[in-house]
Length: 65
Image 1 (cartoon, helix red, strand yellow):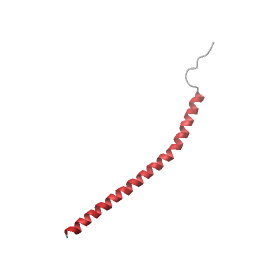
Image 2 (cartoon, helix red, strand yellow):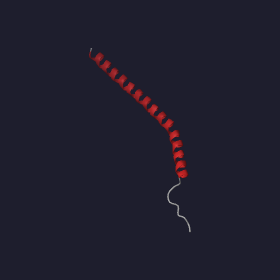
Image 3 (cartoon, rainbow, N blue to C red):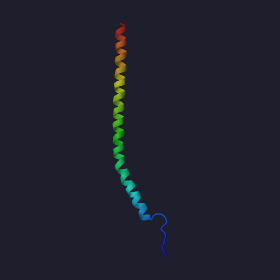
Image 4 (cartoon, rainbow, N blue to C red):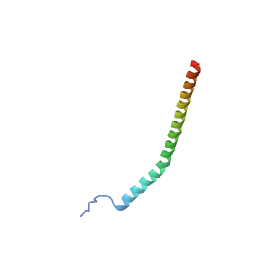
C-alpha cells in the first residue's frame, strides 16, 4: 500500500522561510540605497526650482526700476 503525501513537511517550510529571509536581507540595503538617491535628487531639484524662482523675482524687480 502506497502512502500519499499531503502537503509540505516542516523541514521544507523552514527551508523556504530561510531562503526568503536571505533574499529579504539582500534586498533591503539595495532598496534603502535607491531611496537615499531619490531623496538627494528631489532636494537638488527643489533647490534648482527655488533658485530659478528667486532669480525670476529679482530680474522682475530690477526690470521695473
